[in-house]
Length: 419
Ligand code: HEM
Image (cartoon, rainbow, N blue to C red; front, side, top):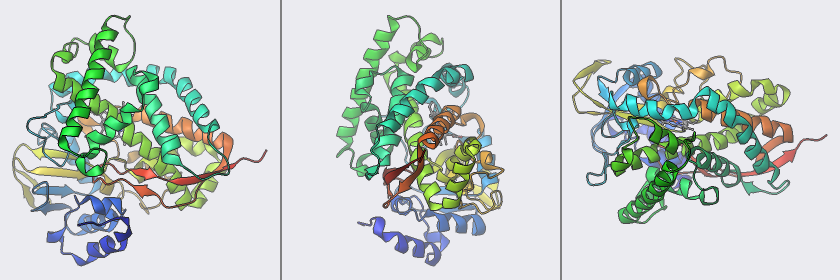
């Protein structure tokens, strides 16, 4: 099926016309066409624990209501993360494990080892550096010319931050988002042409980080992620388990990349779709911290996380069988009208914006949430200093994925502040 973004109307129609038994929301064209909303709304209302019997990933359950998502995410004894948190099962001969796809106790010790990198003290130390980098990116932008916000700002800023977190050679930083894109989007994305090519890119990533690991081991202990892995008794021999090392690298690269990048773009898009909110921002920049939470809710950069049932579980009169795949659709929970009034609107002073589930819930709740929020806050503070408006002047292009809710293009023009 060669469906493209022009098929939005088709997908919106299908949401109403299909019977629920025919629903398969793992079809990435639905998300790429930004047509997911009526599918999710119908499942929330009519069948909040919905079974799709057949899909390219096999059968799966969809959990679509906010409270149910939190319940599943909290009950990690019933719903395991082991094996995979993606809808596809891992490729058997190329299994890169990482702590996001592990249960306690291994999850807990590995998470604990890398958490200090995002501790409040470290974030406070990072903030001036982020502000300098943001300022220099914004000051380099062309005024009165159309350009792609995704490339010039969202990707550039998150890539610079990743290089800093890993102590990765700054001039080679553009390798990081490429590896992230390959890891999340796979073959059908166009980033690579075959499984072999993807594999060889992953091995190149492993080789370069192995070199960095050995180099770092000869230096004084630092506060970058590689140094922290080396300093913790629980992870200092991770290099001897290359696939585990690679898996954790990808977790941190992807965690810090697509998510923040697409929140940066999503914020600009949303403020343009709701101009009265842009006005509120210009009149009252003190709203920025709350606006950041609201942007992350509205965008929901990762559409879902998957769990696997460890035993038979009853929910809303349905029996989820041991071994079944369970998808928690954060993208739906964040638009659940039972919790968020007028949920499809961006409302930058929304009272309960921070309650969103974009960062998940429970023991796997996003480790980098404060870092992501800080990057977005600093960015919007600096944008506010310089520009009256980041004006969207063309169509947003979305990435082909059912997992990452992201953009490849957003044409904008900058309107500078008048003195
Ligand atoms: C707006 C930005 C971000 C969003 C929306 C986001 C979203 C998520 C989600 C949904 C999870 C899984 C939660 C669950 O299963 O309950 C997660 C986990 C994680 N995120 Fe983020 N993330 C963001 C930024 C970051 C950044 C900047 C980092 C880098 C440090 C990061 C690192 C991680 C890690 C390491 C985990 C695994 C936690 C665990 O399994 O215990 N994330 N994130």
